[in-house]
Each structure stands twice: as C-alpha cells, then as structure tokens.
Length: 198
Image 1 (cartoon, helix red, strand yellow):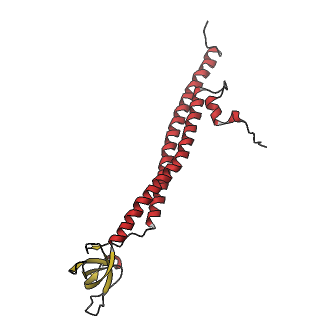
Image 2 (cartoon, helix red, strand yellow; image 1 turned 30 degrees about the horizontal axis):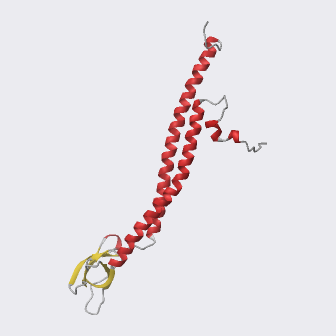
Image 3 (cartoon, helix red, strand yellow; image 1 turned 180 degrees about the vertical axis):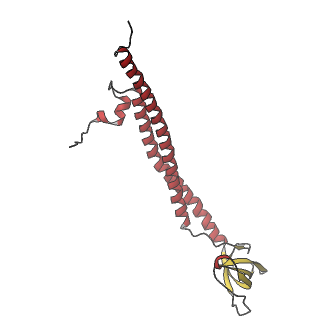
C-alpha cells in the first residue's frame, strides 16, 4: 500500500536548493528547468487570454464596420447559366447609392431565371457604401470563434515549445549522467574502486 506524505524535503524545489548529498548538479539543473517550465506554462495561460481578447476586440470592430458599410439591395437577374457543383452564375443589375444603374456577376446557390419588369428573378445582394457588389458582412459571433482559436493556438504553441526545450535539456542531462556512471563503473572495475593510484 502506498501512503501519502506531506514532506517538503521531497518537493521539486528541494532538489534545487536542498542539501541532500546524493543530488548531483545534473539533478539540480533538471529540477530547476522543470520548475521554470511549470512557471512558464502557468504564465502562458493569462498571456493566451490577453492574445485572445485582443483578437476578439480587433475582429469585433472589423465585423461591426463591415455591418455599417454593407447593406442589402434588390437586384434583377438579367442572365443566368449553370455553374459548378449545382450553382448558378448570374448577371445581375441593381440601382447604386447615387441612383445609377450597376451590374455585376454573382454566383448563386440554386437555379434562377432572368426576370422581367414584374420582379421575377430578383435576388437580394450585398453592396458596400459606394454601391459596389460585395460579400455579406461577417456575423459578429465569428469574432468569438477567432478569439478562441487564437487562444488555443497560443497555448498549444507555448506548450510545444516548452515540451521541446524540456525534452532537449533532460536528454542532455541524461547523457551527462550516463557518461559519469560509465566513468565511475570503469574506475570500479579497473582500479577496484580506488580513484587514486599510489
């Protein structure tokens, strides 16, 4: 049965500053690197939150500006022909912001035919403040998705970098320990455990 003990001498920080004579310098360095990695990982969480909040603010302002500058208008389909994957490529005509006639090409999700004066074949399109054909404004909730994605990506990047650095340091320290063990075993076998030859 394994028992739990609350012994500060067993904590990771004790390996860095403790007086245990069995701890080698490589053990102390490894414990210090692990502590630094833990602190860096804890600091990465609020940093990722700040980056996510900044992304949300920027995207939210951008999407709000799109919503202010774009508006729907009714356009008349003048020509249409089938496009790729069940879409329809349509030539449309609409009245611009200054009252002038505008025209453009639009890809629609379904079939539509040319209309006449009775508004058959009319579609809703989005135009910018100059009256030019444009995409619909981005929904505001996309800012939340962009912020969450940026936050997760920041955390994953920080975690990956910390894991790589920690792995590299531990690998190097293990090599140092193995070399010292090899040297000490050679002394034990060759010289009977004596480090001096008299």
